[in-house]
Length: 321
Image (cartoon, rainbow, N blue to C red):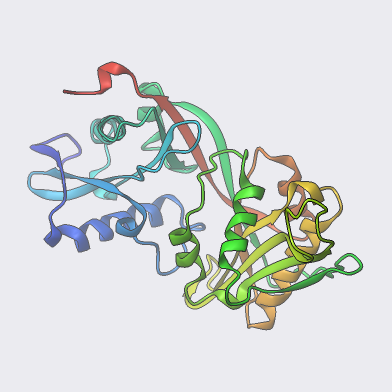
């Protein structure tokens, strides 16, 4: 295939092109991040709210995906993929500019493009288009040989799985804990339900006894002060070939931080996964946030790959009539 532009076009994909779109997506990310790309991949159609495909001489070779759900800073996340045999500076530049156009069309104020750390074909075009590197997300893996750290909940605390009827309380706890963190987007009930689908037993809660408030603000009973979602999906695989197992939504209520709660919840999540048959365990973490990064390293997680975040403000000239 020609490495130039050829007869190229960016357009909305048709229903008949969805399978080809996913194939290009998977192949591109498998090439750029073979460690971070777990067996089974992930669906671009499920993640993105808007997509465009790049065709060269009538063949689908590239994909632009944008999730038009801006973070509080106005950023809309985006990713691009390009067939390995079609990679060139010209096509990379076309995809990057397409990201800005798509975010502008969705009334976004900031395009946030996530780029695998090893995607050398893409990074020069990202920089040339005026994007600025803002963050590095580390994909970490804890090998099966690492020991399971002990979980020691504070006196009176309980670590247990989510119960029926608790979803709304858990959603409130998650959003309270994540609020103010980088790239935070308010979690919706639909997003939580998607995470819990088939994985409820792994949503672990740290709860503490709570006296009733004198003003009636809350009843006497348990307070959810921490979460850890230990997800086990043996039909897929971790980067090392072990059954797919990962930690997400490790959170601690702001009022309870600095007491070792995060380590306790993480340990409980690891123990839960290994009890279900997991060996290695993965997670993603903001590498520029030192506290959680150090925590994960201290129990045996190691960096397997990196994902870089690049931002570009969307200017009035980007908004086409």
